[in-house]
Length: 286
Image 1 (tube, rainbow, N blue to C red):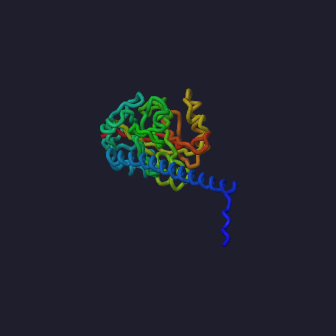
Image 2 (cartoon, rainbow, N blue to C red):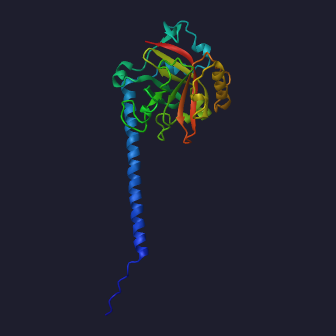
Image 3 (tube, rainbow, N blue to C red):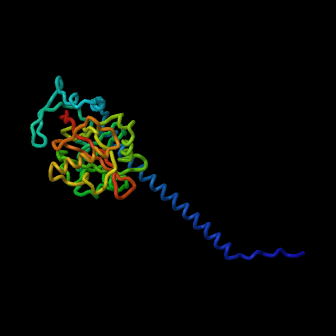
């Protein structure tokens, strides 16, 4: 009986095995990396869900006011409880509103808290901080844990009391829709029509902003620069109206107004997507 001849291992066999091993290693590494991303997303989401449930109640009155289209109706304080405040160097009589955010407890968690942002149309509800620079909270959560979701934060050069002509709030465009991941939905008229307002709650005052522009801008453009004259500010506002992807007829913004710009990345390192709102009403917390 003849013995079966043993097949010799060729260079091609070695290369095929090696390529299979490399592919297996890449697959395992990719799976591990994706799992790490998932855990990071989950960790950040859990923290903010816990903050929301622990320190923030339902919006209440602010949700009803989101439905008003007429600024005159917003500013009509007849028959309402009012308070006298000083803001931006002016004495104002403003309506009061129950503050849904427990700032006394939140300040114990993080003394950098500047406010709490709510955008009902996008179901966005997050604390907002302000650090000594614009890097610290890029990849740290409200509780100062390392996480690529970071935290919403006010530009370090802005005043914390929202008295600047333009206050910038940054947030990551997260793929799972958290932080400012949903902000780009304001390109859709349907989203904009759900509610044209966003709110900033602070310990003593509550600010209501009317959205007048949503668009892609250059990351070094006017939206991120200090205005040294009313002409500069008006030039920026005109560009915001011209470039807006949402209908903004009937809205006026002047150099006497206060604007908040919500900013997030687009995937193109040279541009950002912004949603801009002008202050239409201040409420005193009660």
